[in-house]
Image (cartoon, rainbow, N blue to C red):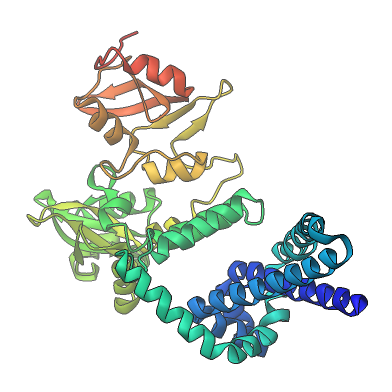
Length: 434
């Protein structure tokens, strides 16, 4: 009779281990992986997804089954040991069952499951579905009792996630990169894709101070010479004043016009071959502008502010670079205007976008209040610094190297320890001149 009792105890421990492994596997299984496997025809993945959709009932079944198995094994073992040793057998049974439950019914199965949660979830999915079906009536009673108690304590309500789905996806990508499973380039591409809805056209545009424009009133020979001297294929044309853009000249259209005129550039009228300008608002999101580019089948647009003044231009390439990043040249220049120094500092042009600098150096400088590095320094300093002034904020020291009129054209950025930043922040001074 004792051997039968021990056999039942072992069976209960095995059942308890099954529920413990199932709990760890099902709660740790990736819903994204299950969805992918389901689309590939894996029916067990469908079962896992169904169980995860009934999370409350699943947890109830796991805990109920686990506790029934553990309590049954402990009670039966206590009965056997008291029959052998009398009242002191309770102590022996307690010590033995504690060791067996912790090792073989908790730690061991959960460790196995946590090392391969997706595979284990697929393995236990069908038995758990059958268990939930068998325990269904009892689980419904438990759910009703739990919900009543939650209402009494004011804990009832819908589950509200702290982060949005986009932020959770971004966090998952960052975690995979931290674990070495996703390369930095792939992480940046996925992050850039997720940022498209949050960025505005003004964040990625080329500012008007850096735009290449040509006076449409120039003699045709001079105009053709300037077009050939530039590196761009689409060039805005202005008349009377740079703010008055009358069209966009495409280099291919100009070449066709030169060919039609048999090479006589004096016969070319650029106003007849220029394309009409397309103006877009600066507050439009980058994702909407990308759709607009595809819809209009064009790659070039001029950006205007709320007063209708031209602020810059944006191209399809600018948007794509937010996803794939800039292309390095043969000298390994990661971003134009960013030059790493042997001492660990970085010399940066003031017009370099903060997002490009963050991506190139894997930094996390804020870009909510300013688009460029110079704009960030001006925002933090609350003034236009002079040459030689330095500031420490966000874990970096910024030193102004060059200033042209009201523009900061070059800075040196050096990472500083957190302690040094806090020490320098105490005097609350605007800057230090050297």
